Length: 540
Image 1 (tube, rainbow, N blue to C red):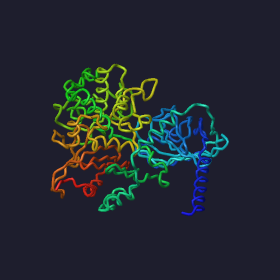
Image 2: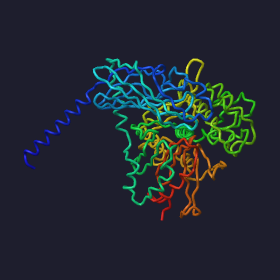
Image 3: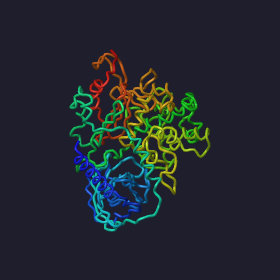
């Protein structure tokens, strides 16, 4: 190559490098603060299924006060505070995400979280920052994963301020860099058709295309996480990889089952037969005869206590409202243990989120007896399981019991109340499936129990009364056979969440998931025939 051409290329490269450094020199290291309660805003209610939100206006129609510290790394704007942020607002809490800066323009992703609930509304804050002066702050929310409460909310904040700080936020930056380095290899969803040209993309996405209730979706194959678009009512969400999704009942698998499988690995499989009454005082004091209930009965939801064993009835009745609408241990336990004894445990599946709530408390008590009274089960699992598999534990949160003075301070609820990103849900599913309960050479989950939970080896499973689905150890299962056009019998285990959330664990190590709030539908099962093309379920 001619010397002149080389010199010109080097000159252009240096100029580009200098421009990048100039555009991304550290502008942000301080507090961003504003109040939205008395600022101009527009609220458009779209759905209020229970007719409670707009009647309680205006508390649902404005953001909590915003007062948080951020710092900058390259073109990333990073919040110092991560995870679920409990606020003084009567209706909403916050999650903050890492944003972007370009020139003087800053964009920050955030999510509104309904207090005491899993409903999640993702939004973006935009503002300009020049010479430490913040101007033109505006925010908008036009997306949610919430079956019963949908709205658009936008506004400006004339009182917004940026207050520079001399705080050393190096730990915040280093944490961000570590987590970025642990991210899975991601590609756009569409590129899977390039890597696996035999796939019929129309069949793979039939239930997604033109479905306004799908928030986002993805598929994981052989080290690559193919991420679908993140939808809002005004186009694609610009922070899709960091979009926040509620767990709802996927936490029954991701927390209830995971916790018991991890403790079984640590303390032996016999933990499943431990009597729950030994660990939950309220059970022994109940008049409804809970004495023979084991930890496995709670995980399987086969306690023999129910009002109506018809599919879904005990979860939807008026008797369960206080369990979801009250937040203290005393209130929740009172409802959870009010189901009358009907039949011997270990035989009849009746779906009750309250079972996993009781299990969460029993497992925490078990762990405290092993390791001391101050141990917290969720924090313990962040150190022993979630962290080692690469989940960002600093932002990993759970709804917890309230006390008279503090919110989200007690034991994690267990049956719902976690949050996922694309990255974290795939890492969790990989642990169950591709990694077989191990991280490297370290076994985290009991192997035999895990394989039973996923239907990979025989075990007692329970009919659920729903579309031939079975349930075992916190996981849903569906069997396939020659009747379905395959040359062998196999089982697909999956996690399911309120509103239409699905995380499917196919036995060929493919993971499929979507987050939706259009109600639970099973039209996605047609993808099993496409997943089979990636790696056949039946060995020839």
